[in-house]
Image 1 (spheres, rainbow, N blue to C red):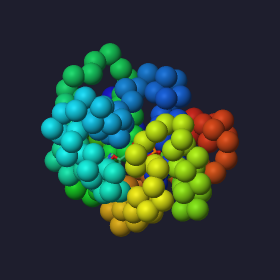
Image 2 (cartoon, rainbow, N blue to C red):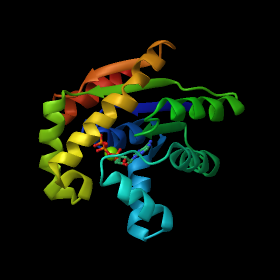
Image 3 (tube, rainbow, N blue to C red):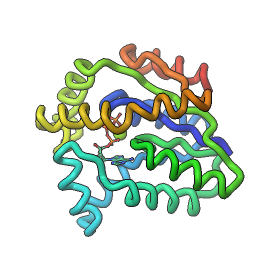
Image 4 (cartoon, rainbow, N blue to C red):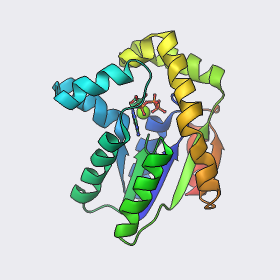
Length: 187
Ligand code: ATP
Ligand code: MG
């Protein structure tokens, strides 16, 4: 089984690229952001707790997202691998993932990172706010807090995966097609 991680700051275009990658390589696309938004929409207790954090630009607790990922690994069949989008986002999550995979005799195949500068993040997220209607996209201070959260908690994962020689980076500022071509070359 392949286990790809799609990495990058908020608004990098992970969701957009994930769809094309999953289709071409027969991967199960797991987006923790989408799973959490589904919980919010369904009005579950988990969704209520997550909404408060997400709409403040904070991360949801590690154990919550780790359990979501484990549940997917155990239930999805008939794929050549998994494409993790938005997970791991902290070192704790990265270590939990390594443990989950090790139990199955598996490991992370590669980390594909879509990189864009902070100014582009703000412009992109503000641009999609009207289209997608996400509460966490609508407010500039929330976007700024998400960028801070990314630099503080998620960026350290780059060194974590570089140390394992699994980190690959593409320039995320090009068109959707250009970024897709770069990613396909890596895979
Ligand atoms: P992109 O636009 O590149 O898809 P994004 O950061 O805008 O990325 P999501 O990945 O959908 O959007 O995440 C939305 C929010 O859900 C995050 O800001 C965070 O609060 C929460 N979240 C998603 N994944 C995790 C995770 N692995 N750990 C903790 N919180 C998470
Ligand atoms: Mg997303």
